[in-house]
Image (cartoon, rainbow, N blue to C red; front, top):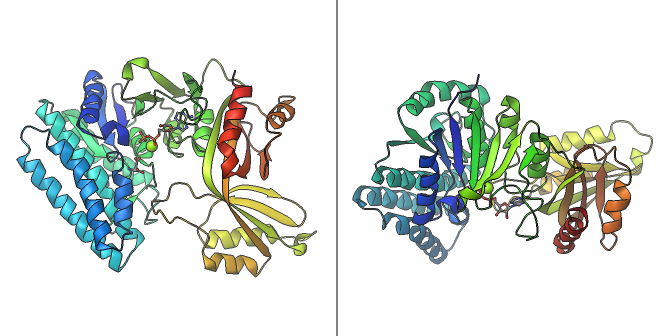
Length: 451
Ligand code: ADP
Ligand code: ASP
Ligand code: MG
């Protein structure tokens, strides 16, 4: 049973970038009385600064980064009327960040990075709550780590859904009945009480998880574009908004690189059939995209997505020929190294696969450790290719329609395609290509297939 009037609204980094943006987002919250839980990202740029602060070695650079961080946060504090208490609180947090940065430079760890980056969301939620209070709104700041229990996969932790549901009902729901609740996206807490994060862009996922736990009637994602477009409007300005889209199509878009939604966002929504709205906090009046179970129109071609920084691993072995169990051995090695395979194609004597590198908090994020390469090399010859992008054409019943191959590959004739996946999903056809050509390929596909 869904709650008759409970919307979880999430505001991304640009929607809480500064005092004006926070006030625009506050206007949206206050004009929609069903919004009861507000999930915030860190102010734009802050998570990147914090990631750098967890990796920096030189004292001079550390001070420069801390200065940049302070500039973003104090510019908001300076606009508040009664700033004394909150100023002291922000100063205390920034001092804590400085100490953590020194500790991280002495002994870096994924735990420390997560602890460090979590401060971005802690800061933005404290400031936003203060803005609401100054506007005489009854709002409570809530530490999401009280309910968002995760495993200890730092940098990309997975939530414990059973605990989240129980704790949300006992700890969060009673507060929701009293006043507006402001909480953090992206962060969680493992069983020993250490802070974790859900992976870059994870605030969308937090909003959807809380929506699920509270049985919300809708999840609103407020960002810097007025909806989900036929492709990234930054790459193709002619892209058009999709007013309604199914969960399957939107999930496929998110998985294949449409940054507007974190890849896991739609999982909780689908499980509970909760519609997701995507709109721009800069222009709420222009509407947005509704992601739902069904739509009136499901076109053959829906969107084009682009995912950068892909690694292609090609494994060659003559032992594969008519052999059994080779793939099982490869997958066992990858699993031992905690790697999930993304795309795969095989021939008689080789396998080409891409690694799922999306989302981890660490900027260094390469999954290809020497240990993994050594183990794989004991089995086969390994080739690693970087500098690739994945382009995906998202649509409906792509495997049934005639002429799709001719139409799509005809358009792509001038490009060098490295690996093609078609047939496993009726919603996508995707291929790897050199990063330098990928944006052109997206523009070309969009121009020909979305007129
Ligand atoms: P937020 O900080 O609000 O979470 P993001 O930067 O993560 O915002 O996501 C919004 C961005 O997603 C847009 O600015 C846009 O460039 C990008 N994007 C990529 N693909 C799409 C798409 N198909 N439709 C809309 N936006 C897209
Ligand atoms: N602040 C985090 C990030 O920049 C989470 C988010 O914005 O969703 O990745
Ligand atoms: Mg985002």
